[in-house]
Length: 412
Image (tube, rainbow, N blue to C red; front, side):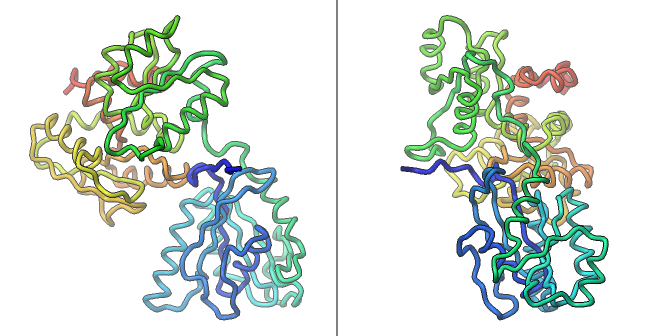
């Protein structure tokens, strides 16, 4: 039997932080009942964050993250370990701070708590190694603090951690993908081009999520390629309640779908779930101000092998240059980090963020906002450039009411 898998970006992220050798890895192994992390008496054994996707009943799908000791030595290697661990903060929904009960606690742990709270992450403080006793220093520090006392070695207190996670875990840490947009029994038509970027024998994540969300909402899901669109529409007794398309065929499909039918894209649905769609829509209005010589940053949330007709590296730059009159300076950055300074960009264009969790995507949106650089995403931008804006926003009444007066070229 093949187990159903939930993609990492949709899982609650629970990260373990603390000094070196406080027993984070041992505690994770005890919690998951698996050998997730290497355990050793040598300080600094965990050098890179370790991710483990699992089911934690009754919370559901989670990602457990083991981080390197953040009190590492002040050398180049130690500094890099600290940076990698701190990056995990931006993904963390629940941060578990582990303390060696027989060791020490103080300013370092206070800093961790402040970092997590600044990131709007819930915090659990765990005293590990209680089988060895509690030092006077730790006893004084935890006074009046809500802590969980455990022993990973003796497997004591582990269930208390699970109970606390269940208590503070949000009931739903991401909005639905599309099942709030259609009613039970209504039809959702998914138009899916099969191009060079489509994985052989599979669908990409937003397409799978749209299909699953429709099924979970008891809607009727119908799928076709753009070349069979008319045949699919003809097979229906009445128009679909919602049509979801790949952004690259926005104009082609929109021309064949009645205005009365709600229409949007997988990328727009994805960024609505993962981030702040309102701000992405507001950011696209800056496109009308672009001129030759402006710098654009295209941000991809994952690293992939660029294709001959790559959407982020070939098609979007081409369409932007055509719109702005050419000679735009366009940089592409893959992975999870922006350049150190993005203040010299006129616009940031982000992908659909299907590999990120909501907390990380919101963090990525906050960075251009702090630099006062407008930001949009692939789906919103393509709808704007191809004359389907603001129609692609009609499924979202609150957002459409703010931006429905705009068209792609009317106020250029």
